[in-house]
Image: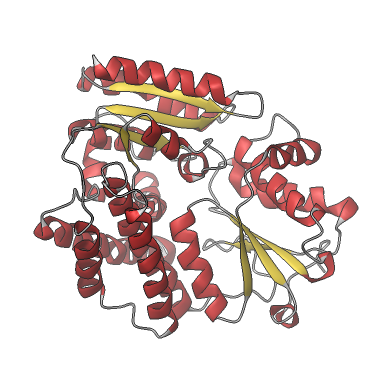
Amino acid sequence: MAKFPVFTDNMKSTHTILVPDMLPIHFNLIISILRNCGYKMELLRTSTQTVIDEGLKNVHNDTCYPALLVIGQFMEALNSGKYDPDKTALMLTQTGGGCRASNYIHLLRKALKEKYPQVPVISLNFSGLEKEGGFKLTVPVIMKLLYAVLYGDILMLLYNQCRPYELVPGESEKVLNKWEKILEEKFSKNQFFGTAKNYKMILDDFAKIKRSKQKKIKVGIVGEIYVKYSPLANNHLEDFLLSEGCEPVVPSLIDFVLYCAINNVNDGKIYGFKNKTTFAFKIGYDVIYAKQKQMINIIKKHGVFEPPHDFEHLRSECDKYINQGVKMGEGWLIPAEMAALASSGTENIICTQPFGCLPNHIVAKGMARVIKQGFPNANIVAIDYDPGATKVNQENRIKLMLANARR
């Protein structure tokens, strides 16, 4: 019997499931899919000092900054009085890797134990870390979640390429919101499979936005997955870059999905074994990569926007600098993204990292010099994020990087 409360089948109709925000566009689509499955889902958007304060109260300050923020966001929500603890559950994703992220769920349960012992925590994972509970993902739902990642990627890509240049402020957001609603409806009616047609319509709508032809500095954002994407974690980095007259270039989420899949295949090659797991992940990788290739080809054919990086291109760039066996945290993916950005003309790169994240420091800071040797014009700066790091200091370091870029 579990030593902690478990989300049961009966709770599906009674409990609201809170989800911490990481990728606003992607998570909106994902939550809409889970709502259509009958779950009461709510995305937490709080981004205040209270979140950090709650995190520091409930998690040791040496713990990974993303864990502190996520747990702080949950505790702030429960303390707000907006949610009934007897009818609330919390959801966390787990990758199952060597990173401390796989232990967030245990830290959260420990934080809940004294004040909210009745609140169950759901693990959203695809590696069998936790099998108990009434929250279950069927194959059709998993397929929908995959397509949500793909659609989220193209919306994020086009939004970031239009927003810095729009002549009418807010026009890009209007198109984004329009397509979020359209896709939510398509998922509810199982009409999401026509990706080629949908991608084309999305591209056409964003292409209609009137944009300036002024050239702006492109700034790539890489690093630890939560800090890279989450506005809460990176102090709204994309908005800051926009205010500085830059175009943020953010890698696709599907790259991380492919990274996790291929690592399982690589393990078999490196350590000389084959089993059902490696076989399943290889099939999964091939299917997902084919979906990414389709999107890239459609964007190229459309001819207006820059497509995302091909994941096999990322792997080939990685092989020039680091072995694909280095997979702790974001592992070889970070230097691969830095090299791919630099080789495609985005030479200004911000590497976001939680202070104290050892894997990230090794494969980000540790590889930056090697990447610069391959790309002498690369302008790479590592920015640490933790409770003690001030926003002013972070932004001043970025401004210094941009001053070098403008020379």
